[in-house]
Each structure stands twice: as C-alpha cells, then as structure tokens.
Length: 137
Image 1: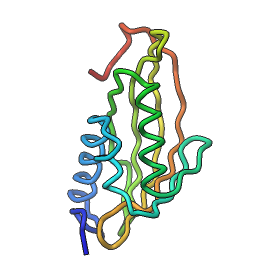
Image 2: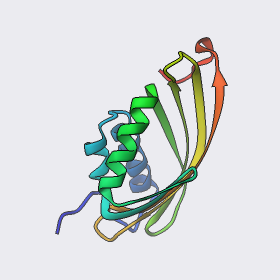
Image 3: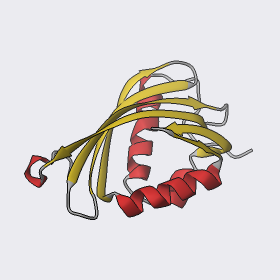
C-alpha cells in the first residue's frame, strides 16, 4: 500500500514536517500534485463548500487558482495529536480587478494510517489590503 510520509502518530517534528509539506505543495498551485496528499475519498469543508474525493479537490483547486492570482500561502502548526493536526494560515492573492486580499484561517486535518489526509475542515476570512501591505512574497 502506498504511504505519504511522515506517518501518524505525529510528534512535534513530524507534524511540523507535514505542515511544511502542505505549504510547499499548495504554493506550487498545481491541483494534481496537491490532490495526491489526500485519500481518494477525502472529505473537505472549505468555507461554505463541501468537497468529496480527489477529483472534486482537483476541480476546486483549479477554479481557486484561476480566481486567486499571485497566490502565496504561509501555514503554521497550531496543535497535533496522534493522527490530527491543526494549523493556522494566511495567504495573499489578487483578483482579476487588481484588488489584493489577505485570507486568514484555521484548518483541522485528520490522516489515515498511511499518512494521507482523509479530512480537511477550513474556516477562512478575507480582508482587502493594498498591494503595499503585502507580507507574503
């Protein structure tokens, strides 16, 4: 069976590694690559959307990054247990009209025994910012 290292149960170092791997993958803005970190039947809540399975994840991410130009993300480990990780994050992006945003949020992740994320629940708020207020480059 395929595995996605590091595997649960997590400690500080392995949870931190999972968070950094997620940040790095999402910053590629490659839906296919990002989707491979999740179980085939992954379950998401992203804002007001409910997403099920890798195919829906790829579709969601494709649309997301078409809308969110110059997307750049920073994640931070908040807490962890055996197979769960909580992160806080912020990312910045520009819409098609040139308006910049900083999006803040929290995610709760649950992993299967092979290290794939089977659940991702994200709460996100957007704040309009001026380009000169950007912090993430």
